[in-house]
Length: 476
Image (tube, rainbow, N blue to C red; front, side, top):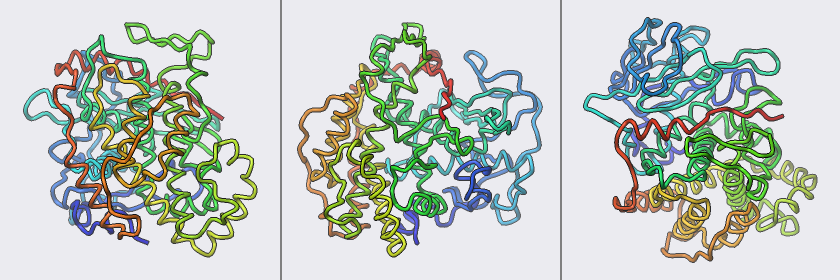
């Protein structure tokens, strides 16, 4: 089986990149006890101790007194643990897993791997927010804090005890780190709204998209693809580690991508001008919760594309073809689904994985193009959904638009009728032809700079960043 990078030869420069070992999921989870060796884009020899690559540096602080909070900002000037260092060959894949340096290497590798994935979808490097020349993004793998967050020039992680009493360092949780990278990607692509243009749905959009950044990035691990197909029998609606975002144990996670949240259930949520969420129901719901309908709709679309790929490969019987079904109909047929999927998967495992890779890449490209066309000011889920459907029509998914639109409508997200506006390669065209067509579209589309209602000063960024509560909600 080949991964995305193998399909593209060395077009993104990763084939000759530097090796790291990363846990796609927490190592305590079954199937992920050993890290997977991956390559990140900087060539061997270009990443120094830290790791440090000229743009990002891991600063493993000793007893950092508090998380960064404006005006307390990088650089950290206190004592640090010894840095992770590369081997004589320039790679970081020989650092012992139980060492302090592995924590630093894992954090850097996770951030860089996520950026590599999304820079491929965006078709260009991500321009991190840089307030002055020589600015270096600081990665702090452990601070005494039950959380993780990204901010102006930093990502830092704490840890927490799960319900089994085991301490989980977020620097070893790829989901959590990739989510924080998602925030930096979105601020880079959309910018910051002016305060009068800031909407609750902008903050919720950030949380939703950051969850999807993590989900799509995790699907670029070979072990994830293998384990996911094996664990679900090919049926992605069965609860699994992919749709349980930020998994901490076998029955504990931060959010669930495959959810049934609807906008009407969250209609009472309010955001004060100071950025405080008010939940009249007393449930303490915040931006993460408001983003769940959008996350759920796009996860359903990913599954729809995956099922469409299975159907085109002849792996779903005509009388059990779920394309276009609503979630209740799918749920009612889960038993039959499971037996059919498992039976076919045992014979055609590679085809199931190929269908999943294709769905992953279509959704990844569609999200990247969608971000490039949105303005941060007065952002709404309806605008996000309409733009996403326009993009899907352009990249060859016009035949699925009614089902995609229904996924948004079921969640209470209004959409208008969307028609195909470009002619992509036919579905029968080779995968690489279609991939390159989508990459070309990604590089052609640029947002009009006049549409970006941004304030390019640290205080403005800090004010909006401060409105992200990062108060993770555990679910059983």
